Amino acid sequence: MPTNFQQLFRHNRWANRLILAACADLTPEQLAADCVGTYGALHVTLAHLAAAESGYVYRLSAEPRILDWRDPAPPPPVSVLADALERSGTRLIALAASTPADAVQLRA
Image 1 (cartoon, rainbow, N blue to C red):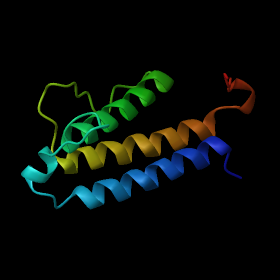
Image 2 (image 1 turned 120 degrees about the horizontal axis):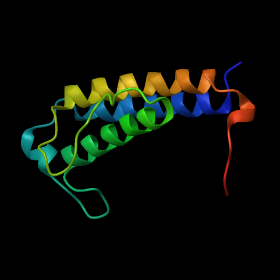
Image 3 (image 1 turned 120 degrees about the vertical axis):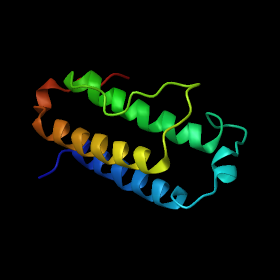
């Protein structure tokens, strides 16, 4: 039976897949658009999301980062971001499955 964390990470990977699929055919102008309340331009926000998730895998496993992007560098292509999020999402699910329940510390 999947743990709650596995379910959480599966849902996260599913949502990331939907977001990146919706962005796959956007024009460069559309990817450059930004709006109040986001990290910046859509493309930069997607890169931030993928780099952050890669950082979580790194922190939890000490494995090399799947995506090592830092703003203000130009964001990688959406296809690269989608691949990075797929890989990090899958790795987070595996890490959740291999982590004993008594090793998880929840903080308020």
